[in-house]
Length: 270
Image 1: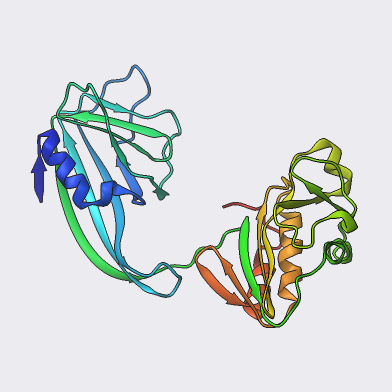
Image 2: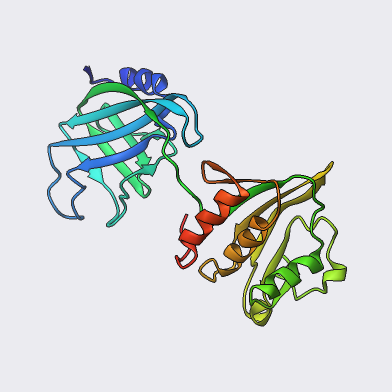
C-alpha cells in the first residue's frame, strides 16, 4: 500500500503503471452523484492492468489489480449513465489548473473527473488464463490454397443465403460487379434495396491474394443487425483450410462454423 499526496508523486506512480492505458475499470464505489448532489468525501476505483503474458484466448497472462482510494474529494463527476463495468480505458490525463494536488480524468467510457487531497493505492498480482471474447462486427481470415473470390462470386454467395446485394464504393451508388476492382479493398456490399437510402455497408477492409492463399478482413457497417456480416462469415466457413481471427480467438473452419451456429440469431454487438 502506498499513499500519494503530491502531483509529482502521482505522476511518478502513473508512469510506473503505464498511465493506466488499457486498464479495465471494474468498479466505482460509490458512483458519482448527479449534478447538484453532495460529493462523497472518499471514493474507491478498482481496476485491472495486464502487465505481461499473452493476449490470445487460452494463453497465460499476469494481471495487476489496483484499488485507488481517494480521500478529501473535492470533485467526483461523471455524466449520468457514463460508467460501464469492464470498460477498457485509454489512460489517465492530468487536470490542469486544479485546486487539489491529485487531479485527473479517465474514460469509463464517459469522462470521469476526480480531484482530491490524496490517494491510497493497494496492489496485488496474479496469473490467469486469457478468457475468450468474440467480435460480432469484425473478423480476419486466411484461406489456404484458394483464390480470392471475385466480386461476382460474393453476389452469388449472398444470393445463395437469401440476400440480394450490390457493391458500392464509400457512399456511392450500386456498382456492377464487373466494374469493382479485383482486390475490392475499401469497397462495401449493401442490401440492393437499401443502397439509395443508406451509407456504407459490409466493409471489405482487406481483400488480397498472398501467394497460394487469400486474406480477407471485413467490418460490419451495414446497420442490419449483422445479417450480411453473418452471411459473409458463413461463406468463409465453407472454405477449406481456413484460419479465422475473431476477437482474441483463432479458429479453424469447423470451429468457426460451430461458433456461428451459436450467434446466428443474435444482434451484433462489439
